[in-house]
Image 1 (tube, rainbow, N blue to C red):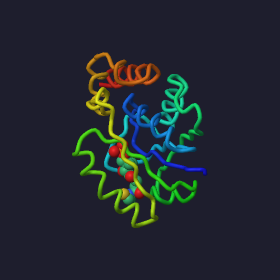
Image 2: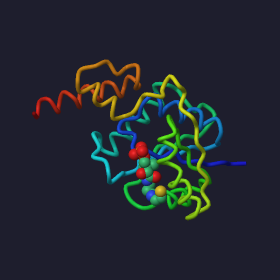
Image 3: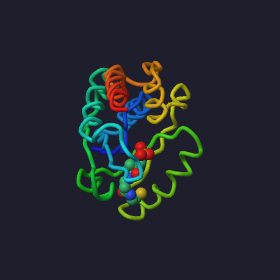
Image 4: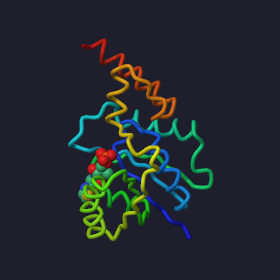
Length: 170
Ligand code: PNS
């Protein structure tokens, strides 16, 4: 049976924590769409296109999802459940690090089920990634810290050049 799932997020940028969730989700579903969603409450560092490219390059670098079709896509407007309907996905994948993450996610999971019977599958973060977030990684990179423990090499390079550009502008 074909089981299609969508793993949505801002991915600004993708971290090793996200990659771990995607790799584990890829073992549960026959097709996984990693979708860069426009979040109006956030001011992204990287454009949607850059984030998609970084996700594709990270997957190539780390070689995840060998037996699963992985699609990387964007959703700039509209409901996530409409994207799910469009691609035939019956599940949304969400990683969670803490119960605070779950408190934030639970109402969204309930609304998505109400709207389109799309179920949410919550995957607990591996404790080695439990403290990683895209915003902390950006902060560490901007302050010249080493982010290679937290992100794929291709993302570390993109962060270094974005931090240098920001400093040159200020
Ligand atoms: O990585 P983020 O920023 O925490 O991801 C949040 C995201 C993109 C998953 C969330 O904002 C979302 O689900 N947006 C989709 C918009 C939508 O369909 N909203 C209505 C039902 S919750």
